[in-house]
Image (tube, rainbow, N blue to C red; front, side, top):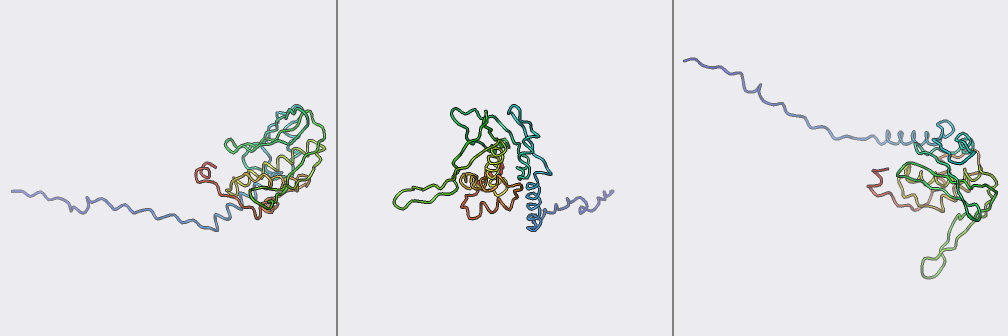
Length: 212
């Protein structure tokens, strides 16, 4: 009777699959990456803005020159639209997070106008939530004034959500930031940090944070 000699069974065993180690993030590397993003966002004059103008006679190059020295909104597009007012010119803009766009509306036909800008509010004594608003009357003499003011207002909305991860409804802080900086030649992220210092802002919900 012949015997069938089989190879050792140890060679047929499956090799154990090593479990992947848990990833560990270097906090210093994360901070360096965030700092690099902020530096790129602050160099609007070197990165250039994604601009589209729907206003007759105003080209994208004209808008870039008017907004020179202001921080960039990352990959958001800046769209200039005409504002057809009924009685008098006024300020109007919008930051559309879902489509990645900042809209600045330029009054047409344009003429110099005054606008009340609310810079702070104080709660009145007594029952209920009543506030006394503090405002400044600002004269907008040129289209450049309007473009820079409205853009800075909407840019701070973008900064609060996209860079800080907070809800972006701080209208008074955005007005105050725009008023303080729209006539300056150069505006940086340090100016934005100073503008939001001390603000009580809720963080974004997890779902919106993932989308953003």
